Amino acid sequence: MIKVVIIEDEAPAANKLKTLLKRHDEEVEVLAVLDSVEESAKWFRHFPAPDLIFMDVQLADGLSLEIFKQASLNAPVIFTTAYDQYMLQAFRNNGIEYLLKPLDEAELRQALAKFRQFCQPKQEAGGWEDKIHQLLQYVQPSGHKERFLVKSGQQLYYVNTADLACLYADGKLVYAIDFAGKKHVMEDNLATIEQQLPVREFYRVSRHLVVHVKSVRRVHPWFSGRLKLDLEPSPAVDLEVSRDRVAGFKEWLGK
Image 1: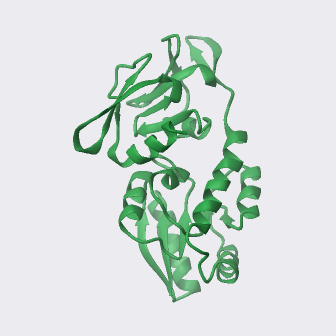
Image 2: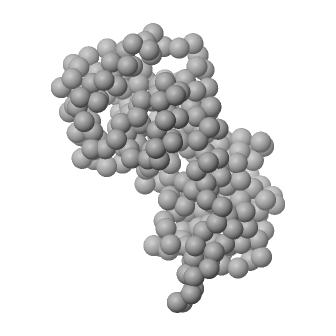
Image 3: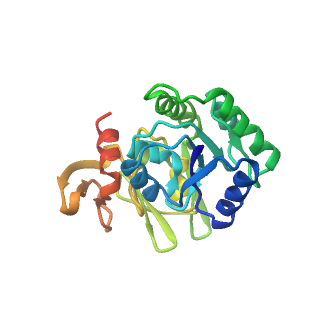
């Protein structure tokens, strides 16, 4: 029996994957279908790693790769999304399969065959987790943007990524505050922008806030296991670190 967890925020895509898996192999057991970084991190902190994970890269609350910063898990991953061709090559070089949507049944069958050939029995403890962290180090530096184009009235200008102290979502808009204290209106949503930020300098502390490491002045214990931040400059928004992101935030801040 192959125990599987599906991480996918689109219900039709998750249902299609479950159907294809069952059609291909009756020995596949889907333990859970998770639809966010937050929910997935919670699940993996409470349950042992499955035999195999199917994971969409882009979830509603951020990149699914953030899960590996918030929870410890040791399992091979088959990614299921459209992404940069160079990242596709990186996944394959690390022995982790990658399927483009919409899913093709023949390609899924080949991916499961590869899993059976190379990934069973499981690697020794830590093996797959090490592969994921190597992957993060490999693909993230080349994926970030050095500057962002923003609009003010009828004019366009750019801000350097290194000059951004924090970014936050307020309703449907996303704002960036630079280290000079100036506010900029961004064109993309926070999840898309986060994907383009260097992971060593920026961290998403909650659903609505991403901070630059140099903007963090003090960290205070807060209610229910959360943290409270003092940022400089400080935006007029809630500056709490979500409880589920505390462990990852501390690890990031201490690097």
